[in-house]
Length: 618
Image (cartoon, rainbow, N blue to C red):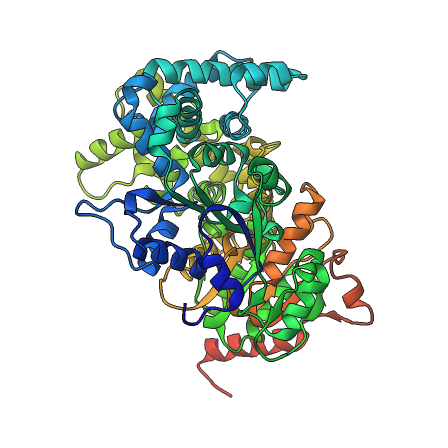
């Protein structure tokens, strides 16, 4: 137990019974989680009698390493994801469940099942992603199609419930299970067969990040808990209630589900300075009640700034960085990060993006840029493929894979390097109807190209977006708040203002995207959700504006937890800023401060550009 404090030792040594461990940020919960597993195995527990559950495969693999355990060669994995465990269970019991030996429904198979259902519904009454998310939410809430039908009290919900019913029926006929159904069907069998439940229940069960468990996952945990259950997490870091996570699953509901449960607390924060911990306790009554304290020096107080606009905020912050590779810029939404990506591209500033946070890598942004690039007269074969694969009405009836394959074959028969853009109108597929769709596409693209010639970049891009119904496609699209496609398209349009020609703007976008393509240690851009569980010396929480953080469409309690998570990522220095009307989270801190125009930094940047262009230096 070397290196552990008294609270950590108590957690590591917990054995029989039900334990919910509340861990403040930076308290070493993963270390405790892995050391407890190691100590249990060292006491003689066979690996097959231990199971640690987590949310990602990479986390499970990392925990195995930290526990000093290597699976394979007959040794079972002791750390699993919920879905990984459920998939093994379903495959082992596929006969009893009446499913295929390899039951997991792959994305293209899911599309083939769900796609035809749309043709049976009222025209445009539903969207694919909307139905997909609805079905997933119902399953995570342990709601059957019949439950969904009973709950439906609007026409939209009636249509969604009907789609859910048809989807489940067709999956059953195919003998397939999607990710959520892996757990749903496993839970059903465990509820119905006591012998199987007793056989699969491990002697010791652990669960990491338990504050993010949804109702279905808690049900699974209840059914496979044996003599010992040990769950770790922080209710103050629950950011996923929008997808079914139970904010009180680790506290009040845990006691209800597991009578006699014992709560342990890991209150020592090893990450942050005293000043940052003091501010985190100020914004979190729970962390204050748990007695969160640190071991580092007091350090510098968090600073709060208000900038004139997004561009000023981004450029001023990047110009002032001292340790870029130890710094993260955290934003509530993907759209907010685009100002920083744009500024980094202008400055030749290398950076990396966490997860799917990259603004220029978002599907709707890439698709819009592809249409714009064609209309700017710079279409490549890759541009045409992205256009064909886009979800917009211009290619709604095109058989995408068949069209791209036909273009490849047609090009191979041409003399010289003939681009796909030219081949679109040459009847490449041999199918009368499909070739007509491609000719119409080529006509509209070329006509738009003529219409926007000579127009400024923003006006030209607006014409492209309007002509091809790009923004209309994403209106009312129920996506995650931190990554709204319509917002991203509008951000791209705003970014095009005063950027010269459309082609010059497209080149700037490609340059900004290229700046993020490296695995080297460098400045990090991320949404707050993607940053969870990580830490940096210097953290900039940006765009803390009213309506953005907290987000106008978010749950107020969850939005405040998201803000707390962002602030608790900082180890040495925390910077918090807004670029519009300040959020209530920071309004009081900004009283008496001035709006930062960033003029000094922008003047320095202009000199740098001018010197670079002339080859001179100061």
